[in-house]
View 1 (cartoon, helix red, strand yellow):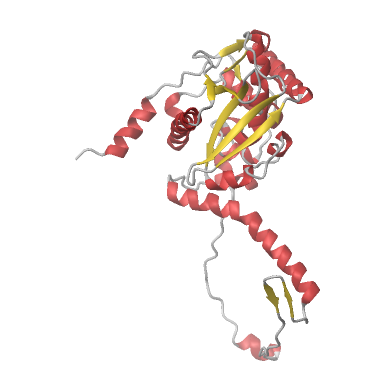
View 2 (tube, one colour):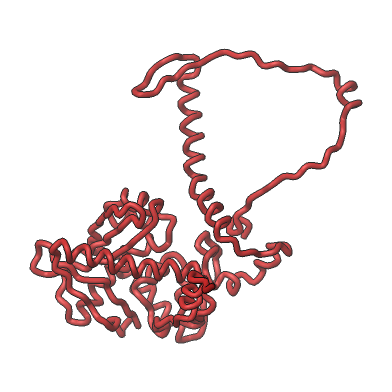
Length: 328
């Protein structure tokens, strides 16, 4: 019997990456403020298609499918959509390339850049709270942090290639892949931020031309980066001979545990604050009933000389979960 999922994964892994690594790209420009070293390595040591993680390729493939669906929904709803391309646009001064998803006509005479972003319910819950481009920079997800810079750079890139677009705002258009819920944010052009990105890309070009790089600095984003092993060659030493295994289900649960950790800490903090204020009072606040009850706890006062007679050493196992990025 043929294994359908396996054949599709094999086909996906065989697809070649068509990105031009001789250039910087708008979608990656946000790394200027997060890790410029990654941008330099992408130019000097492009990843081979076979070395890219399968799960990462699946996510990109699914993202492309969702983009087609989101575009189709807008067209069916009567929005006027103008495609860009098919080839990437260039800005030679910065060796920059990019290709906006689409241009969309709203109420203006000129179209706005629109970029489609499909995401999980967890990510969507975060971005749904965002209403300004600065909000995105606080996200724990690097691709969310980089989204405003990507869409801002599209505006001067399009102008360089004789496209007439709204110079003041672009649109980030999000979709929850599970529920289908949508959320849009107008990204108003911020010239100082754009200049930070463009100046950073100039520095990247200089490093690439001189065949040099900047010193590595480990961050939480490094845990998934293809260059982690190159930047931190002592990582295997830190693993202390532990076996590395592939278990996507276990990894998914561990990642979810990490996502829930801040919520647990916030819960404990709020619980402690409420307890301190209302311990000893019986009250109702809104839909919540707060009561204090007394209970008896048995304790045993055992003389030290008696306790010592019954002391035993019993070997037990302690299970720890440590994130590698914290070790590094």
